[in-house]
Length: 90
View 1 (tube, rainbow, N blue to C red):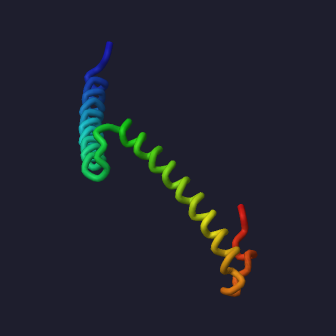
View 2 (view 1 turned 120 degrees about the vertical axis):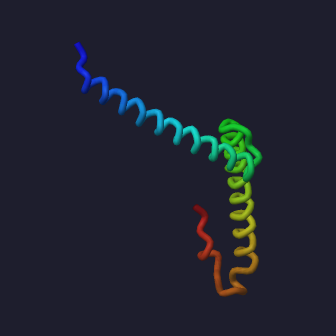
């Protein structure tokens, strides 16, 4: 048989977990609102898709930058006293 102290402890734990759940739901709601306002995403899935697209764009831009920097250094590095040794291909 379960004693009264066990029931009281269980009630306290249930109330504590309910409060934590409510806080978590409120935080989630706020985060989703922020996603919508700042990035135009209505869901986590949309945000993840946008992140992947953005990563792809950053990768492309980094490659273009590296190519243009290499070309610049090959053409102007000696005149700037910065030979091509400044640019090291990774």
